[in-house]
Image (cartoon, rainbow, N blue to C red; front, top):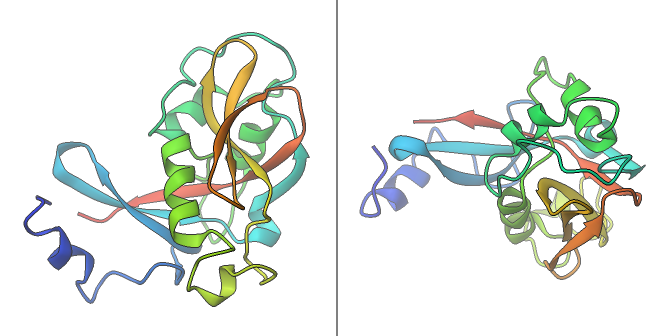
Length: 181
């Protein structure tokens, strides 16, 4: 079990890669707590395969049942995996590195990615501004909906989160999670 007192020891264990390293079909973006004291690795997809430009969150202004978690992007994406939700459908349809469990990240997952791999402040060379894996300094959809007309966006320039109109075109970039302990 991961506790506050042993978290540093768990995160520096030699079996775990460093933030930004290639891992499990993509790149390690963050370590995040999971239910029951478990820990998972959040993996961001390679940009060339796992990012889509100019994609809508939803094609209509209606609520999506089950897409309101700020922490569970997989559950949100499963609730939205249809042609009315192009960003989530894109992510759920991916098969990268023999993995088909890619999804559109929730807003808390997006914030963790920005904190570790934001292009204007990350020490990871491949994710620095202008590098091949770098996030664009623009808006990216999260899978977290709020209200009938809006879903959360993450800005990868300054880390700001904002509610975007679902039918507008922004970016989507897939992630997956791997339970570590």
